[in-house]
Image (tube, rainbow, N blue to C red; front, top):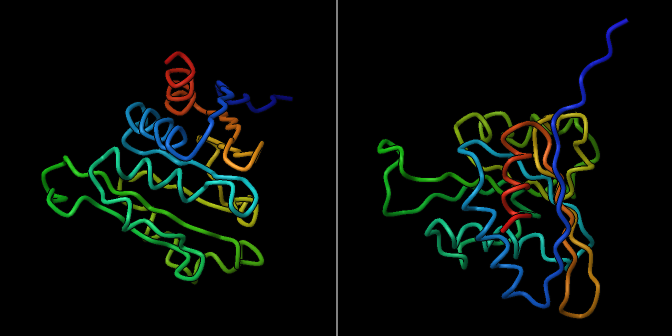
Length: 172
């Protein structure tokens, strides 16, 4: 009997003192993510999941003020407005919040397949709601509230590209 191989993984734990430091970690992650990346964001309400996505967006020239929680819209797409998609230079960010879904059977109604089809960085809040639809190769990012301003981030990268991104973040 052949067992499936466990995907390559790397992990890192980073503690940040405040929102500015959280944005700095997000910017560092943006600098090492592959062209197609999937990040599953886990954390309590107010932990900083959307704030983290704002930091990633800012790192690629997207106005962080345009990044708001997709709780009601479920899926938001962000692309730098001054860089055309045809030039291969713009980064598409798909920001999804699955909190209101009760299960994977509702995923098709959200436009999920169309949203994640192009090369993009996909950030999903409340990923446990769609656990069966999550790709094997991804980064799991858990944000724990450790004080009114401090957070502890635990990142685990699965698969070669995502593990390499987490390892690079850990190194530096």
